[in-house]
Image (cartoon, rainbow, N blue to C red; front, side):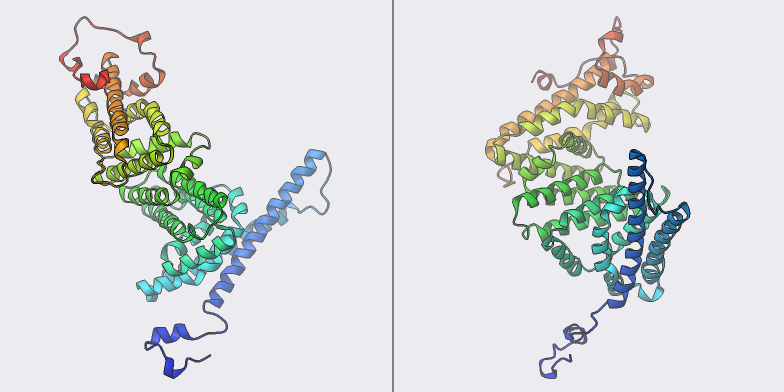
Length: 451
């Protein structure tokens, strides 16, 4: 159908987009990619079904009728591998690495060629990909193609596909797919090439932000919204627990703060009820608050302030997070000191104090949250923040004092800090000298310790 010349949009690009073409744009690329992914998926599914049937037959002591031979299974495995390699090497990589298509608009268009089939077929194959090992070649190549399209595709097209998944009730499966990609990201390249791995994490964080923005208002069912929120916080927890660069940590913390702001403390609390996830979140936040990068510490402090403020608005108190944080704080302090010692940064008690300074400064920033400057903070919550942070400072003082009294302040014994703090059996092997050295004199904040 041609555009009416009297109503033409005015530019060549707008004219091109205004033409209704049959077949639709990207039809050939989507057809080829779909065929490769379907062949790979059907081959993997056949292998899994055959393995299930043989296991069931062995359990009940019978034979499988028309069972596939070993050669048939190897042939199916080879077919799955070659089909996904064909999709990666000849469809994605060949176009993306072509010197003619290195401009930004060309990069967008190449990624958009394969976005729709990769998203929908990946969601269909999520159960089969989950059965594979994280470093399985088929799973790695499949998810690498998906992450490339998620990273390089135009935002408008990606948002449209996410809305389609949300309307079809498959958004939770897509978030589960992101979790699989997070697990496999570390195996994409060797340890000598960390940049592609970090780019994969950046792509996952950006995709989570898009998922939250596009689909939060579309989901009307509270139960579905809670399930999606729990899945997203689960993926974010796994991302934060993976060693990353400061830039990648900033993006992941930004995605976590954005998700918390959109879903609220109620969904976050539901997500952390599973297992010990609340302790994991507290460990990660305290570790980020002791990061050497100011930007990472600032984002961690901002997340903690947002979480405490929303918890106070939801429940009228912050006891759940405070008790969890204070319980694991000695463990975090001991681990941070031990890690600094293992890196050769700690040789005396003065170095121990220096290794904990970022955490102390971050706790002071949380305590200094002012309702006049930050509308998230309720003025009635300020005394609770002060009590929490002063108690945390006192616990840090107590850990440092225990290290000094246990005699671990010398260079040769700082490696025993983690064992000393975790076992809490200091009195069994405590040797009190006749006179303490000048470095062992108690100089912690007495008022803080008494509180």
